[in-house]
Image (cartoon, rainbow, N blue to C red; front, side, top):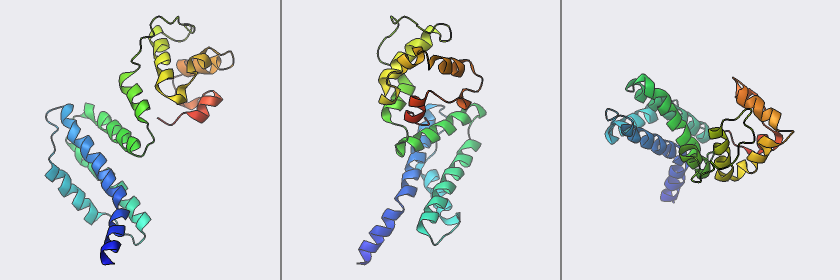
Length: 193
């Protein structure tokens, strides 16, 4: 009976362990950016335990979990940033965010692979039908994007469509493209990533 209670309680804290795991592997891979960025498991464990002890307490399990996840994420970010060159801090922030989103299934492996590698197929032979606002490299990229994930299905046709083309053109030409709504089908279909 007691063992069951302990197991149930331990399972409740899995989101904290998961976040710790994600942060650890991002930190461990920083050495791939620069050899100076090497952090030991002992350093990580000490900081993790310290944050478990020092973070705000709560009797409500959901609130406590949220506090721990937020505190651990922020504390590790601040600690690691102290040791990074200024030019690498934005990359570290991006890697943390991307890994957290991938772990929570908000970025699919297909989206991530497309972001990292682009298309494995060569679309340079496709005639650029939107050369008035897209460079050839962007046109080729659209073809690859279309095949990368079902959410981008028919994006090439949308960019050429009489109704959607002005929207895409405005997005491409804008200094603040994130403020412009996408064509309706993509507004509903695409993830924040």
